[in-house]
Image 1 (cartoon, rainbow, N blue to C red):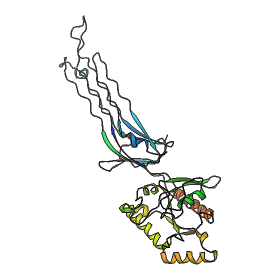
Image 2: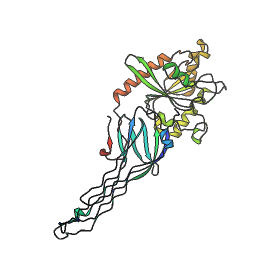
Image 3: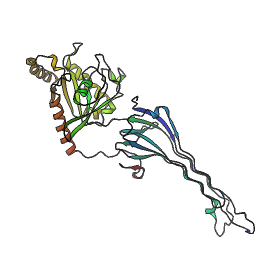
Length: 357
């Protein structure tokens, strides 16, 4: 199935039905009085997170979602029927923004979480409600209210604990293949990865975490070079970033300069993402003689002038990968112990958002 992580849709809730102005007309019942019923409520549009869905591809082709209108009221005290609600099912991790104002509407981060996107219009009132001792033949009734209408921007942000980033061909896909059962495509040309890949890393019987691999960044990504910044949103939920660096680039570029390129692109994209904990991982150390590795790592750290943890691995041979994943698991356990669950970011009242099922 094609991976789609963005979609723009239009939703329209149903209008309420009109109230009815009617009078009882029946043989042998003179002056039967008003009997116009109310209109029915229009259908509302809800959204629900479903862990069995992993892409927004359905919304690329179904761009408009319209709920039905409520029925009009009728005579003989007949109320119009309310229209059924519509429920849109999206992957867990979907963020929904108003396309016109760019306001955050809801962040669906848990399976079964539901939120109201567009409320259906209330039905109008029939003349049955206007009767009184001084108004015995009311002809007043009200029209149904229009339903809400919105244009929405849907963004899928994958739920992962650790994110991999780096230049193309830094070895991100090879690493995720080495430490998990994920099998992304690996080749010797840039931009082999065209969409995020997720893998589950198990470091013990009851210890595991999810790692995400995104397409590589290059200098000028903020201006649209390469695949641009379009996949960086998938790292926004991670607790730790692993910055992979090719210690022996095929183009003979400077690894320190390569690190600074990625750091600059992170800062341009999002300051919060730039401030996330980030470890440097020197990959492809199998290409360097064993007696030169310590000197290379020390020189790399000295030139970069950073206190960031630096690990040396070979994703191709698996050397150093187990130690790296164990350190990541320890970091995540400590981070989860001190962090609290994130609040649902929604602009609606609490009554419009339901928790996990």
